[in-house]
Image 1: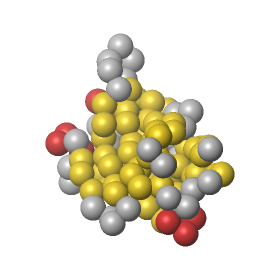
Image 2 (image 1 turned 180 degrees about the vertical axis):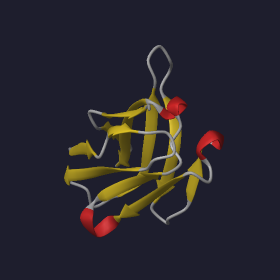
Image 3 (image 1 turned 45 degrees about the horizontal axis):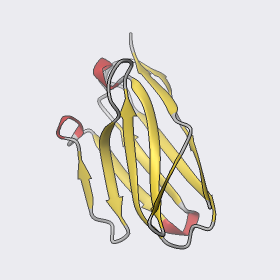
Length: 115
């Protein structure tokens, strides 16, 4: 079993930055893929960024150049650095981890971009 806890969300003005963290506890020796998803009110959950065990990444087109996903394997933690935030980035952000063939999810953290 893997438990994921996100942190770092909040209210930020347009153009601001936030750094989300997602820490895994439990049996985490073989987390292969980390993902961040966002879900805005009334919309489907959307894949924002992913990072593989080898460090390769991919991003949603709308966040390329603004968001950066990174992982610290020693700390079993994944991060999402979010810069140049826009009101349309407002959503609940969830992290997910692929571990031994199963996906595990955090509880989500709210990001609100508003002046």
